Length: 413
Image (cartoon, rainbow, N blue to C red; front, side, top):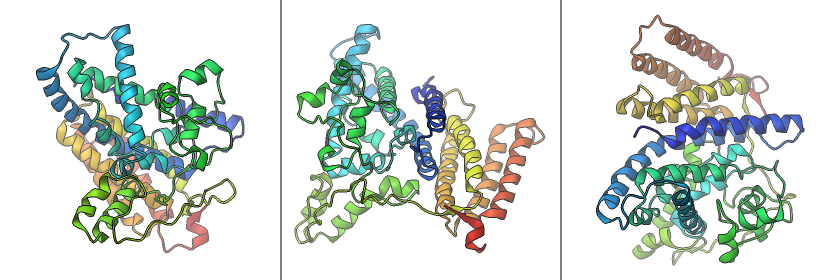
């Protein structure tokens, strides 16, 4: 694979994130909280390691279907086929998205994105590591029509970027004809709402027409409350990604009947196995009664995390960019390094006791691996800079991230 659509789109997405931060600062709008932004971004970096695996699976499975069962030969990308493929992906995704809100195992894959409690471009990149795999289980009919796997994979990346642009509160409702045809930020704010009037509405990513046709449309009227019912209440990307799977597993384990242990994964949300108590009735979360998840983080966390978010972006690009000098083994090890990094970010955000030793180990091991992977002399500009950054980080961790320090000294809201 010579190009990765996500590697190409990442700098553009980062540019929009920076623009939104600057706009919020300029207009004095409190739409981005530091803790959730870091947690969202860390979840996004981890998700990119899954995209590499998904891409490999797509080219193998979709390639087999295209080579053996395609109905039309030689579909080349031009304006007409581009639009047809985009509409095909958008239509399929509408149903995948809708099922993702109604079937337990698909909600488990999709819910990490909805567990964010605000709406901004950081939320747009808060994706589940299993969501991409889940989505690609359904796009295969496009290979039977005759679209090449590489075109399908690239178009899904573009389609995902279109949905990225919907995640903001800075853009109000647009012209009536645009709101009637296309999915807009206003429509998608409704989709993320946990107001009872907004639940399970506006599944379209490119066109809102599907929602109008299939009776899942709702207009933005009252103020949107963001989040989900039964949220993970954590900044840890592992908890964010798998909290609903854990809930399903516990219910499956407690179910008295074996058939129910299997059925629960594929039943609608709210379905309960026989012999287990029903879930309590939901009490609507409103602007007045919502208690957003917040924690006290270590003192000195903000500058440290900002520096390491930037280093995380560099590490991610080394993993996902096909033009990177890294081979397969380096990318796998790099993925483990990246996950260790983003899990430790949650330890900083939540002031966890284990963070100190875990971060020291991570800094030393990551520095050693990156120097080894560089195939450059230790005394080189890049490696000396890396060593200096690692030493400075270790000093910072030792100075600020030790749990035995007095609470008023080493914690901050």
